[in-house]
Amino acid sequence: MAVHPFRVLHVRLDQGKGQVLELPGRAEHLGGSGLAAMLYQQFGDLTLPALHPSQPLIFAIGPLTGWFPLMSKTVCGFKSPYTEEYAETHAGGRLGLSLRFSGLDALVLTGAAARLTCLVVGSNRMEFHDVNFMKGMDVFTTGKHMRRYGKSNAGHRSTLRIGPAGENQSAFACINVDTYRHFGRLGAGAVLGAKQVKGLIVAGDRSLPLPENKNYPKLFKEIHTALTATDMMRKYHDLGTPINMAVLNGIRALPWRNLQATTDACIDDVSGERFAEQLLLRKTACAGCPVGCIHIGLLRQLFAEDHNYLYRQVGYDHETVFANGSMLGMTKAWKILVLLDEAEKQGLDAISSGVALAWATEAFEKGLISEKETLVPLKWDDVESYRLACVHLGLASNEFYRLLAQGVLKAAAVYGGADFACVLGQEMAGYATGENFFISQAMGFRYSHLDSAGYSYDQKTKDKDAAKAIEFMIEDEKARVMLCSLVSCLFARSAYTPEKVHEALIATDQPELAEALDSSVEAIRRTRWRLKLQSGYAPEQVQLPKRFLEVETWKGKMDPAYVEELKTLYAQKIREMGA
Image 1: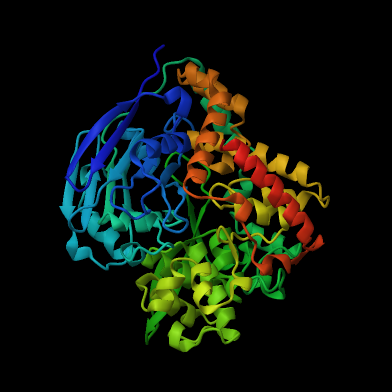
Image 2: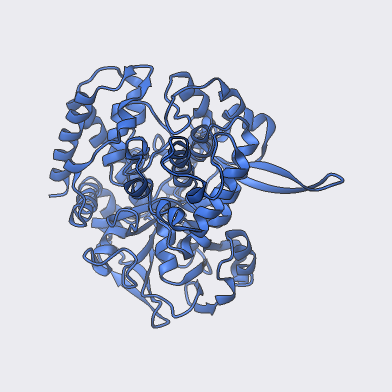
């Protein structure tokens, strides 16, 4: 059977034109992460700045999207304005299925529109709407105005948009996807802002025939049953990832107050259990997912006398709760929802914004900055000051916030405080588990806890065998590269083993992809690392701020010699993988 080419819609924003391309390479690049890297090689230029109009912004899905549960994510590939390196960020929502129902494997945007624009694309449509009246609008208001577009495909329509942070080209700017999902990290929102695109609608306006292979229904049922009728996904549906808050606090691995501590007695009031008891309103899921891991809290705020309340529905998970909770010394769960709601309005990556404000608070306490820079007095647990600071961060209200929105280390280079900057390639994720996690995030491909399970390795072993630890990270990364090329939710990694993925590709009549799976995953990993290295990444030069070496967990104090050994070995492996 002939392998179908990729169908890619290339939109030239500066010309107001688009073209569907049929590109070979499906068996080599699979989709998702592999396809995004392939397309960046074709359309990108690593020598140009990230925000140069000609740089592509790529959205890519995988070969199983729409046919199996939890094959529900989309990869966004771009050159990051945060690092000036090739980068990826992933999001769920409806976008993956909307692209599939549009008959597209990927969407590539190049150039910049002349005026602020809302772009609508489908299988046989492309519309450019002048939305200059939306300039400066927050994400919520923008979303309401965008509902007028693509109405005929409302059921299969996905809506992407940016807030003030994206328009201001903040390196913390995210792209909001539908409701509660984001291309969150490394500044994809700034790239969309630089292209003068306020919103993007993908209208899934075609049908999707099911595979005729007789094994497909049986395999679908087997996987669906494993995901819904066993305990495999119970954790994610029950309390969700915020269950990690109390667990990590219990083993002295939860960052508090800019990582000045790793445990605190206040945990009971900001734990996943407390959210569930007091604030959880409902659970929802990405399109194509039967699990329902997205937890929505009810935020109720008094806005006038006589008991007049404003209410909002705010998504929360471990990473955003940690960054806007324990990192800021919050003592009540509802306060965290206030900050998450504001970050959402501004179009900010809530992890980076929370961690950045934690650094700013400690810098304020140490006298490195004052209210002249912060405009509000920053103080642990002071929710209103933090909410206002979040607004200033989104609006880039002054030079201090403009710098801070480019990354904590950029602000620290001017004001001091690099020693206590909680940055591991980007603002840290919510795990202070030890040396293996710190190195895995600081040097990983996406600077993410999702690159490999270094945090898990820390929690399972006390030994300091660096070669063994790096081998674990390398093997774990390979499995994740496969899933990110499919593009599966990583929560489903127990269900989608390489053997099961092989079966799924056969059942969907893609035997060439199944046969080449192992070699293609290795090739994709090599391409990704090569792009990152060619864009200037030097793993040997990675440094951990001093604060990470001061951490004490259930295993004791950090071991600087072990950190150096991990770094040296990992850098060697990265060079080999990207050669």
